[in-house]
Image: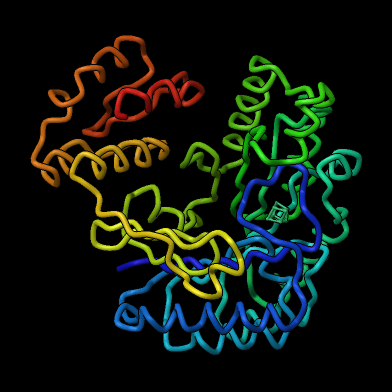
Length: 363
Ligand code: SF4
């Protein structure tokens, strides 16, 4: 079975930290052209429709589409019968009517960009919502029977403290949400924060403080019954994101839309990232992965899962002995950054904090 990722790049305003593929909301004429191009691209994968078991509509901000545009997209997706059907949304653009459309077309998982409950920090990030938008969206979705909800949250934002992180968790936990994604703020190139950083007007939180915040998040959420199943993801039992698991388990997925990428039968597809070029020709390039590329991707993505990678499965799949192929695994085990448990190779608690250092040995 394979996943389907659909990218809707439009955003009403640009967040100061964002390096995703996004553009401002376009005139109706261009949104229509975009949807038509996207639907043509979707239909070029018709042969795979009966193999797709997860759909994820991300962005950008998918719910900047009008109701009619959402319906047009959902109608095109009707022949696909996924087990999990997710959509991302920004709380300030959400309406109950959108929720009804989601429900009608089988959306059963919603991911809301909440980021923090601190209004000053939301402003600092250039987010346009407040806590009532989040509360109302959650209430509305639940009233429609869509209870598999994720909140995207961020830590290590300048101005945050351990106390404010705890306040965020306490606030969002009250909403009784089965999944939380908690990302470390990264200073990315080509963002407004980077522009400020170059002018000495943005100061990152130091590593020590950021690590304490992350440790605190893991401890607090674990104590609240969330399973820390991936470096940045926490879920109640059976609420793991099935679509995102495909990325971490190195399974195939189709990616359509501006800047989307996919992985199909050992081939990576990369779509155009420039809006007007995408409208003319969606695909930018295809790369056939070598066996070495596949192993590297499998290990780096698989180690993001806290359960780790199944050693015998990987050895069998690639006809290798991982310990022989990567002698540095032993070094990492001696440093207590990697550990083997019940046939799985995994990051230790220390290794999770120093993940990039560990991943280097596979590159
Ligand atoms: S809404 Fe999401 S995609 Fe759009 S600018 Fe903000 S973070 Fe980026």
